[in-house]
Figure 1 (cartoon, rainbow, N blue to C red):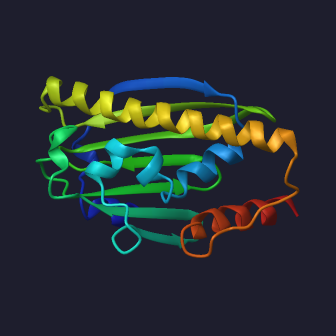
Figure 2 (figure 1 turned 90 degrees about the vertical axis):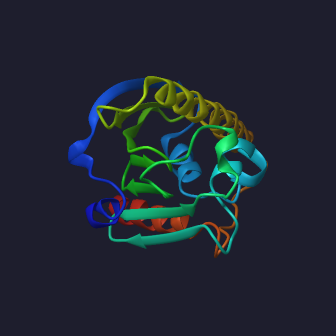
Length: 196
C-alpha cells in the first residue's frame, strides 16, 4: 500500500489539519463492508459519482494480504462539487484489515485515515484525521470537507438501514456479488480466518 500511495502523493509533505468523530448505529463489520464496495455509489452518492468514475470498467478493485484497494479516475466534468485541479489526478481508497480506512481524493494533496471501531454489536465509532499540504487554500479545504461530510451522511443512512434489516432477521443470509463485492469477500475471508 505505501508504494501505491507514493505513486500519487508524498505523505511526508502533508500536515494534520482536521479530525471528525462520529458514531453509527451499525455493527463495525457492516460499516467496513460498506467502505469496501462502490457499486452503491452511483445511486447513493450522486456528488461522489459526479467526481469519481465508479463505472464497472473504470473503477478498479484489488486485494493483497491485509489490504483492499479501490482506484477511481476523475470524471472530466468533476469540478462542480469541489475543485479537483491539483496534483492528484485519481482517487485511491484503501482498507487495512481489520478496520482502518484510508482515503485519497482527487485535487490538491490530501489524505484521511481512521479506524472503524466496534462499541457494541450494533454500534460503531469512527474518526477520520485529515492531512493536507501546509499551503493548501483554506477555502478548498472547507469545500472538500463539506463534500466528504455529505458522502459520510449518505453512508450513515445506508449502514444504519442495513443494520436494521439484519436485526429484523427476515433473510437468513445473502450472496456476495463476484465482481462488485470481491473486496467484501476478501474482508469476510480474513475475518473468518481470524476467528477460527
